[in-house]
Length: 520
Image (cartoon, rainbow, N blue to C red; front, side, top):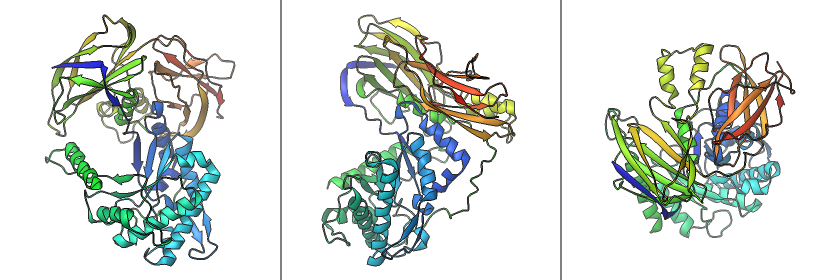
C-alpha cells in the first residue's frame, strides 16, 4: 500500500481533542494506588492527558445546616482528591454531581434548588481561594453524568432546575467560570432535548432571567457491539450517533457506587502501566498542524494515518492498523513517502506499539500470567512498560524535501514516524523533582519520582540517577528510555538521593535536577 504525506498542504490546526480521561467514583483518589495512577496519567508528555472527568466529587462533601441561611460545608476529602489532580498537572472536568447528606430529593422545590445554588457558590469560592481565579477559570464544570439512563431519577424539569441552580451558584462568584452539560449518553434523548430547549428559551427558576446558555454541550455514546467477538464497541457507529446529536443542536439523583468508608493508609501494591499510556504518549508527539495524506480514503478501513507538523522543527506521521474484531490479524507493508519536508537534515525515530513492542500484557503472559508476581517478575514487566523506539534514532539527509520509508504494520498496531530538526542546544534543566515513598507489593519499599516535563520536542529520554549521597557518584536506575515524567524504583539501601536529567536525540544532556532525598 502506498501513502504520500504532503507537508506543504495544510488541512488546518490539529486539535488534540483526546487529552482526557475519567473514572468513578471520586473517593478512589483517597487511596494510594489511585494517586500513583494519576501521577502516571499526569506524566504523559506535553500535557498529553490534560483533563480528568470524575464522577461523584460532591459525595466527598458533607454539610451542616443545608437549607438554612448559614450552612457549614466540610471540604477536607474533596480538597484531598483535587490536590492529586492539580499536583499532577491535570485539570478537572468537575461534574457537579453527588447528593450531599442525601438532602436533595426534588430540585423543583425552590428551597432545595436554593440550597444547591448556595452549595455550588460556596464550592466556587472555596476552590478559587485554594487555587486562584485563573486556575479555576481553566477548569470545566459539568452537570450530572448520564441523566437520561437512570443516574438521575427526578425527571427533566428537576434537571433543568438543578442546572439553573448550578449556573446561578457559579456565576455569582465568577461569570467567567465555564458550565456545560447535559452529559447524556442516549443520542438525541428526551433529556437532551429538554435541556437544550430550556437553555434556548427557558427561564432560570431562581432568578427569573433567561436560562444560561451552556459554555459547551457534552454528550457521550454508550457503545453497541457489531459482532459477538468484539473487544471494543462499533467505533464509527459511536461517531455517527454523536454527529446526529451535533446536527440536532444546530437546528432525586442517585449514585452508581455507594459511599464507602475509606482506609486511606497506604497498602502494598505495584502498578504496571498499560499500553494505552504509551499510545497517549505517541499522540502527544503529534504536531499542531494537520497535513494532507494521499492513499487513504476510506476511514472505515483498519489502516489509517494522521500526519502533522510543528512549524519548521518537526513532522510526525502516525500509522494505525486496528479493527473492532478479535479474530482480525495479519501484516501489511506501507510505502510511505513524505514530501515538502521543512528541513534538509533531521533525526529519524520510529516508535511502535503492537503485541511484541510496548505491550506489557504479553510480558505478563510470558511469565505465566502470575496473580502474585515476584519482585523479579514485577521488574521484568516494568522494564517493558515504557514506549520504546524500535531502532536507534539516526540522522538522515533529506533530498529535495523527500523522504521515503517502507513500514511493516501488523494488525493491531500503531507506528509513529518522527522527524526532528536539530534545535542546536541541549535540553533544559529538569525541575520540580518530587519523591513519594510506598510499601511495595512484596514488602519492599518503593519510591515514585515525578518531575516537570521539558517542552523540547527533541527529547530521546529522561535519565533517572541515584546515589548514596548528593556528592555521588550517580548511576542510572531506569534501564530503558522513557519520555513520561514518572518513574517507580524499588528502593536500594545504597540509594538515598535521586536526580533526573533530559537527553536529546543527539545525546546532549541537560543539567541534572536538584536532588531529592528519601529516608530509609
